[in-house]
Length: 194
Image (cartoon, rainbow, N blue to C red):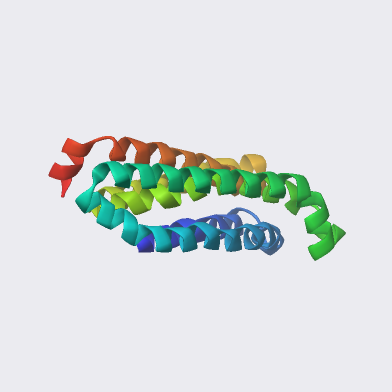
């Protein structure tokens, strides 16, 4: 699953390089490099919560459920705030950091900023799948997201240019969110899948 995730995050740049040029890769990467560091927040929070959630899952499933909902709600709120911050600050941020020659990065940064909300939520949901011993299902979901991202990028880059991969990430992260919710609601299926 980790290797599929790495491929997923690098795929947009590879396809942009194939469909466009080095300038397109630089413009997209400029936006991605601003959004990527924000993922330290859910990673740090879940590193702290994961042991407590795993213990509660073994001892008190109601407590685990409550902890999971609280953590997901907190990450959802944080992700929403970060997404709004990117949406409204993108023109100023791009101009201040990169200058006017990177103006085409603004819509990409806005779209990638919107992806923060489902990404933050997916951090929590994928951790819950791992805590429940559902690594196989998580690997399957990750494989689906990689394939969908490849398909959407292939379709969107010629049509939407630089914004294509960012739109793809937004759609794919939303699909992953729904897939994780479905997987977490299937206890009998999950128990037999392992």
